[in-house]
Every structure is written in C-alpha cells, then in structure tokens.
Length: 241
Image (cartoon, rainbow, N blue to C red):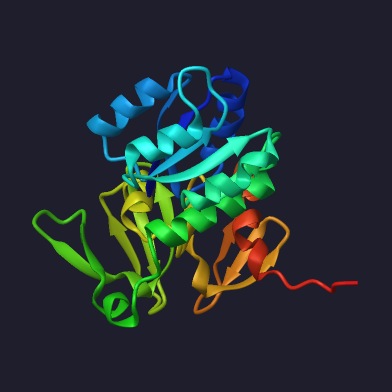
C-alpha cells in the first residue's frame, strides 16, 4: 500500500484527486491540505511515499516544494499549465498530470509511482514470501505462500483464502489487513468481499472474472469495476487502426 497526500490550493482539485485515490486499490490517502507549508510539516511527522502536488500556489510553488523535500517522497505534479512540465521532469517527478485529470490518466501516473516505490520482487523473493494466518482453532497458525493465493473471499468476521492447490483456508482476518499486506501490484480488489491475484486471471467476462486452477468465479462490483479495468488496461490488446 502506498501512503500519499494531496497538496493543492483549490479544494475542488483536492476533491477530484481524493475520489481518484479512493478508486485505486494500492493508494492510501493519509492527508490533504491547501497549504504547502502544512504539507512540509506532514512529511516530518509521517512516512509519506507519494505526493500529488499542485504547481502554482500562493505561499510556495510546487517546484520550490520539491527542492525543499530533497527527494524524501516521490512526487506527481498536478496543474492546468503545461509549461512547467520540463522543469518538473528535471526535478525527477514521477509524472505530470494536466487538469482536469481523468481517472484513466490518473491511474497511469499512479502505476508509474507503484513501479518505482514497490518494484516487482525477484523470483527468489517470491518463492520465499509467505504469511502465517490465525485459524478458528486456538493456537494454530497456517503458513500460506503468497504465490499460491488465487483469491480471497470476505466472510463477515473472517476470510476464506483460496489457493491454487484447491484449499479454502478460513482465517481470522479482515479484507483490509490482507489488502495492505499483500503486494499491491499483484493483487486487485474487485468487490467489497473479493481480492484476487491478477497473475491468475484467465478471462474477464462482464462483471465476472475466471481464474486458473479453479472453477469458481469472482464477481466484479460496480463501485470497483472502473479501477479494476484501469489496472488491466495495459494488458488489453486492441487493433490499432
């Protein structure tokens, strides 16, 4: 999960970015502010991975802000003015989003940030990455290799973890905790009660997802569909005319 803040002197711009962030499974909005000086204070108090930063603000420009933080956090610039793009990239910003910012363009920039902040693990690390989960049986912990997880189903006060070996492991966890623990680039939320491993997707059909190694079908909720399909967009092949 990438912790981020929004700094923009216009509240309507903050509201739009907040909406986009809430639709993006691997982003977690910690704070938003119209005051860049307050933004600097937040950086001293919290671990912030990514800043969505306006360029033109009365107390401090976005470029001055970037120079002040000296690479402490990654930055995506947001502005209505394209002439600052070159200076932004000279200061190593992740992306430069022109207002009004569409969700499709936003998610592209967010994915760039994800690749920089949480790079894909090596095969050796994937082979050794695992979690222990508590079960209903007191004192019993079960080891689950993350690469074996197909999807996770939320069931009120616990979850059911479906693996490629055909197991359905009941664990005393909630979806939020698992979503934060699992690699954001490898798992996607499709429904309030479902989280799936994107690498095992076999077919997307309407509001359903078919996975390898199982006959069970994962639903795609209406409120999650836009964000999920945007994550899948780079993998979709189309005929370029």
